[in-house]
Length: 288
Image (cartoon, rainbow, N blue to C red; front, side, top):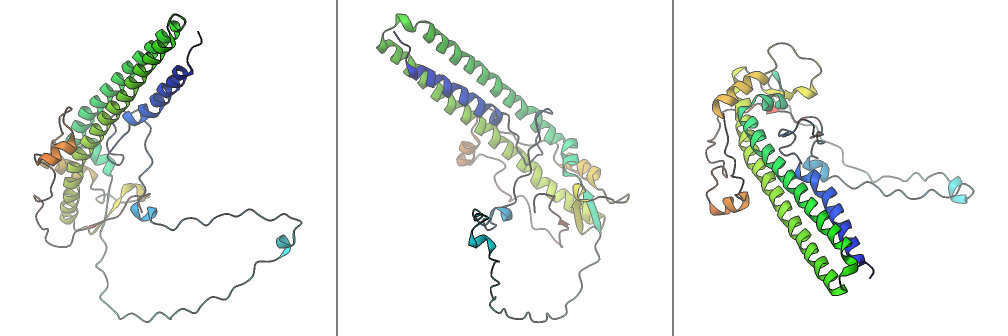
């Protein structure tokens, strides 16, 4: 009896799911701040929303043949419609003198005890997810090999029944592992969101204490003098104020927790109105 082609296709599904899911199970989160494993490749910086709204690139049309009349013709110079002249703008007060500081957000996160807590907890969950996936994949391969070995002694109906059973097992595992991976990613968002909110406040307070009204990311600065880098000072203050963060339990779906109203970090109500102008923090390179 010939072995059914459906089993071969099922094997391809198993392999494609394995190769597609494993990277996502180990994906990083938090805009490059959360790095559970040092050997993981760094992700490219996320595209700024403004870049996503840019006009699409013009369509490149094929060039005409070199021996055609169209190739010999120079492009026409088209007249442009007139535009209104820009009026003069009334004189206004000059901006305040710039007092610049620099900060390495990555350096702060490496010193943050809360960020280390997130790394340990969620890194362990990602490792467990990867181990469970490998174990499940091994079970798929064993079942497929058994089916191939017993194909000659089975009827067509028996082969189809076992194929359908294995296919249902693979599909269920796909849903389960994707859902577990989503829960880990959302737990990272909840955890890192707390650090990010507090970090913004600490940067503003430290910058104001030094009279700084413009803070640049150190990756943008080729040279600075002593006293301008506030990375270590911000890290010290952040650890005093936020030594740890709330991380949803491993068996808790953050979406369901938020819907229940029991999420302790869903609102910014604890952040009262700030007095005085806040120092400007320039976006990092690649985020403009």
